Amino acid sequence: MSQPMNRYKMDLRDLRFLLFELFKVQTDVLSKAPFAEWGEDEVNMVLDESLRFATDVTGPLNQVGDKQGCSLREDGTVRVPEGFAGAWKKLYEAGWRSLSAPAEHGGQEAPYFLATAVEELLAGSNTAFSMYPGLTLGAAELIKHFGSERQAQLYADRMFRGEWAGTMCLTEPHAGSDVGAATTKAIKNDDGTYAIKGTKIYISGGDHDLTPNIVHLVLARIEGAEPGTKGLSLFAVPKHRVDEQGAITGTNDVVTVSLEHKMGINGSCTAVLQFGDEDACIGELVGDVEHRGIKQMFRMMNFARIGVAVQGLSVASSAYLNTLEYAKDRTQGPGIDSWKDPSAPKVSILKHPNIRRDLLDMKAKVEGIRALITKLTTHQDRAVALQGVDDEAAAYHQGQVDLLTPLAKAYGSDQGFAVCERAIQVFGGAGYLQDWPIEQYLRDAKIFSIYEGTNAIQALDLVGRKLGQAGGKNAQAFLGDVAKFVAAHREHPELADGVAVLGKAQEAVAGGAMQFLQWFQSGKMAHIPLSAECYLEMVSELCLGWLLLESAVVSIEKLKEVSDGHPDKMFYEGKKYAALYFARNVLPSVMAKAKTLGTADTSAVDIPDDAFATV
Image (cartoon, rainbow, N blue to C red):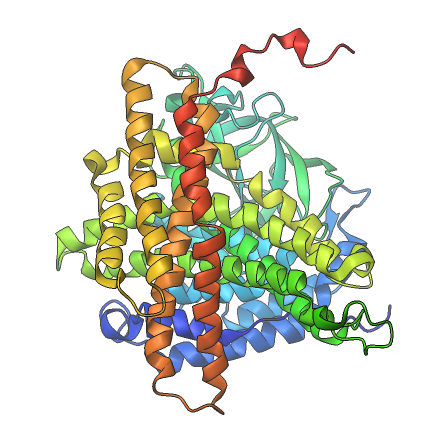
């Protein structure tokens, strides 16, 4: 095999801007309990070193994983792509995947914002590989939070340290997103364990040879439990049985039936798993209370949804930076001022206005989504830091985490794919070739809007749960924060027109919330799924517009302090123009979508089934 090449690109300057200049984590998160050991220098060191890891270790394996994929051996075990096992070992030796883990389990108890920033680097450099440790961390944290002390020591400790891996097993062949229709059974044994029997599909990391054991978190229904999600319980089901010291004692009747042949993320094993085909699969109830499975699993699902948002951002960011580099180097045609002159010198395509528009659109969305995710994670850290100190403030921050999660997952994944699509268009025919990384980014990115709850589910979560959560306080606080920004900057000398549009968008989003309330109260339930995704886009675009303009306010102030030759001058100029572009070209669509909501169109449900086509 030829020497693999890294194609991942990342500019840490934007992350540092968000952390230290916009959200100012050094003021009330770093060096404060429970993050007292973390300061600005430590954060910067981790960012630098983890980027080096991403470009030196995982980045070069991205194309390798795509081309080789995973394979099912004759003995039923799975082989991962070449180099993945070595990268796994180096990852845990470096500590990049255990940053936020508890110290007692080998972790460094870093702020969530830092662990998420590092995840962007890992996912962007190699999405498929990063899924294995990402799922393992989520499963370990769930067991640590809900499981017994014995389960934390036996399972979670080894997972935090990368000695064993973990998965989440929800989906079944007949159920799909309807998790409550799961039929996997759990039959209680005399010793308190449970016999598990059923089939799970689309299981990411379902089997591999990275670790000697894999702990599957399996949703199953105990015999006699009520139907729907309320009757589900969660079980820790290791691939191999172990004794109390963690030594493997034999198989546990968990069989990899087949591997899915996918559009992208080929280096990530997506498996069909059969539990208990020989009536010999043993699982342990996570914790000691039955029928709490869906509540427990939601902890990991929310963790995973933020992770998917990071995946969407990460590939979009690298796609944008690769495209920018290409546009600077690729020459084609004369400049716009000489387009009729055949003798005029060719210019780089970066000089063509439509290409510049595409690149600025990509830049604004990538940086806006990164700001959204960083805001979400810093809210999470502040909620943790303020617990028991200022419970009202902690509740505000946690409420914003809850509200922003469906926005980050859905908008981040949708726009991650859209940015990759636009990147291919800028590349032209070259982008359609495997000679460049963009076509893999596009294929990898499509799954993001589907797994961990499709984006339609995220939209229904937003309008059905999050708008009314805490009596509507969380949504009101978000809209109030935007309104305060508008009031403070409506006369800004350079941004006033953008701030004015933001104010109109805020009013449109508030009005949209009332529209959904009216539909719920009047029983017009079909309008909810018909319009929820449109509304999620409205709220997401409002949020990005706000954060981009807020970034621009900070940047314009910073411009007063830097000289013309300083590298930060162009960085801050970029922030200003990204905000103005988004406010003038994307934010107006919020008001247009509000008008669409107001039409309350039901054509999609009114059309007869047979009228869709005559075939």
